[in-house]
Image 1: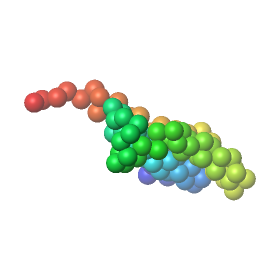
Image 2: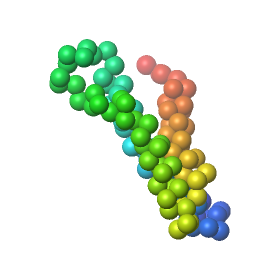
Image 3: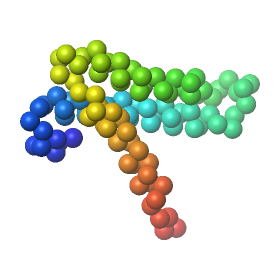
Length: 101
């Protein structure tokens, strides 16, 4: 995101990207909580994060709603969505990394 400060003449592009990256981080946290609950039964009451599974898409919907609300103040949609999906790069690199064990 710091490289965007140098490249973009509009500071709201960088702010939009950072806002999207924060929403993507929250989404990946919720996704991790959801994955932890896979394999448990419905009777397991001690499973933490069991309710996050259905609400994990709320992060993307909330991002789009907030950016749409503050578009007049300068937030931009495309950089915020690109920031949201930045977590996919980390997931992809982790999946492609060779295990040297």
